[in-house]
Length: 67
View (cartoon, rainbow, N blue to C red):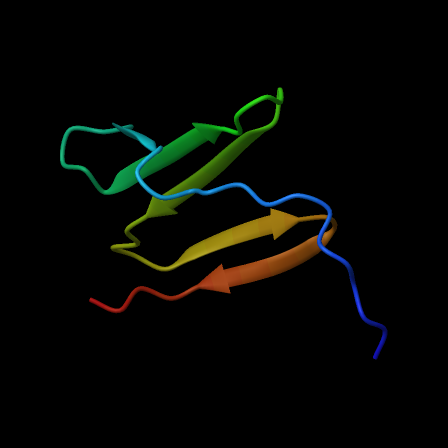
């Protein structure tokens, strides 16, 4: 396995903006813009109450609920 060098590191702690996309909070989005860049990190979390089918890059995915 080839060794990779770290080009730049950014601290991600305590810099998140949190928004809820619905009334009950089952869809939450965390965003952060890296200092001194125009790069934005977006993390979306969705609580799945029922099984859901997703399609991404031509592939089909089934997400099972755990409730």
